[in-house]
Image (cartoon, rainbow, N blue to C red):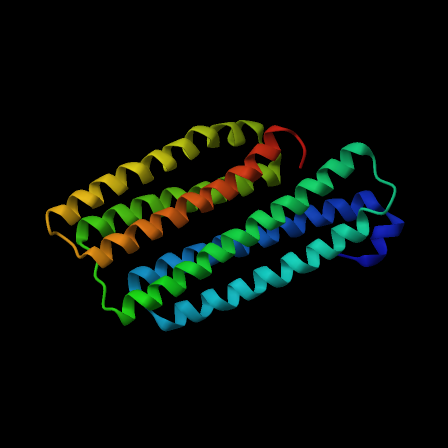
Length: 216
C-alpha cells in the first residue's frame, strides 16, 4: 500500500487496498485452521503460531483501515466510495474471524487445564463442521478476488447448511450428554466451539453479500 498513490492515483490505491484485504483474508484462514489443529493435536507450537498470526491480522487490519481513511478524503467516484466502505467493513469481518480463532485457541488451553475430553463421535462432528466452515471462508474470499457472482450466490445455501448443521449438532450432543456419553463440561465446550464456527461463517457471508451487490 503505497502512500503516494493515495493522492497521485486514488483508483489504483483502491485496487491495492482490495489486494491487501485478500492478504488479510489469507491470514484469517490460516488462524482459523491453526485453531482447529490446536484443538485436535494440542501442540504448543501450533498455538504459538496461532497467536502470532492473530497479531499479524490486527496489524494488517489497522494499516489497511488507516490507508482507507486517508484515501476516503480523495476524489473518488460514488462507486469507488462504496467499494472503499465495503473493503473497510470486510477488513473488520476478517479481523473478527481472527478474534474467533484466538478465542478457540484460548478455549483449548482451558480444555487442557481441565483435562476435558471429547467423545470420538463429537470429534468427527467437529471435523465436519470445521471443514465446511474453512472451505466456506476460502470460497468467500475467492468470490471477492474474482468478483465471482456465481460462487457468491452458491454460498447462500451453504451458509444456511452450516447454520442448520450447528442446530443439529447441538441436539445430538445434548443426547450424548443425557446418555452419559460425555461430561457436562465437554458438552458445554463443544457447543461453544461450534458456535464460533457459525459466527465465522457469518463474517465470511458478509463478504459474499458484498460481491452479490457488486460493491467490492
